[in-house]
Image (tube, rainbow, N blue to C red):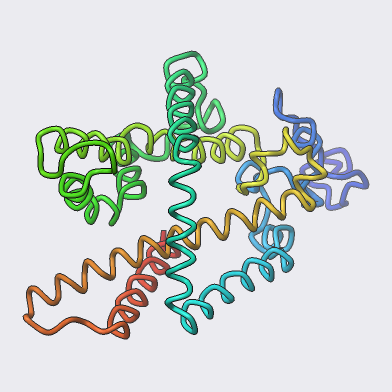
Length: 306
């Protein structure tokens, strides 16, 4: 047999590159991706581009030093401020909270209601049948596991602490000009306010952010970054430039302070439990910081291990 006529026996490397795979209705960039030269476009999520090594992903999506520096400086500065001038932080935080409640409380309620109505419309129309992934993919988790993860991530320590505390607080101390404390009307208002904070309105806000990121990444093939959600609004160039960096910084700060609040509540609750069970005196701030450190280490280990 002439091996030169049999392509299976040929040892010569072809001069032309590896054929490019077509992706049907997927974006043109995915359709013309060259697997022999794995330098994929920035707006394509690595999970949707098979054949890409982990090292190449890390090289392509390296740390944004500007975003890290700005967010890090702001976070460290706030921590130092809290350590050096604790009373000052408390005064400023209470004043800012009071101003927001007095002047922007109506806006918060209106936005939460609009988001809830929007998510209900999306859920019960044809848009609710769009999968958060490719059409041929099967769900990675069962419905029970998915709902369990949603509750664990969406509620967590907050509902354990505020679940009983919040309605009792509103019952004993209703908002001004509403009802008499410890009355039947105050009880109804306290439960209504608690349901608003932990009910459908809160879940709709969670669904809006999580659904937007998941749809952008796993359905549209963009990166798993907050800036990808705003690509159609800012444009691809701006979302990968200064506008995207601003989104990253705000997202990091919001996530950092939100997590810090949850850890603080958890530390206070665990510390109070230790006091009640063991009978020791009130725990010091050092012990509370150690509790937060243990919780943080456990969270990191859980996240890294999957």
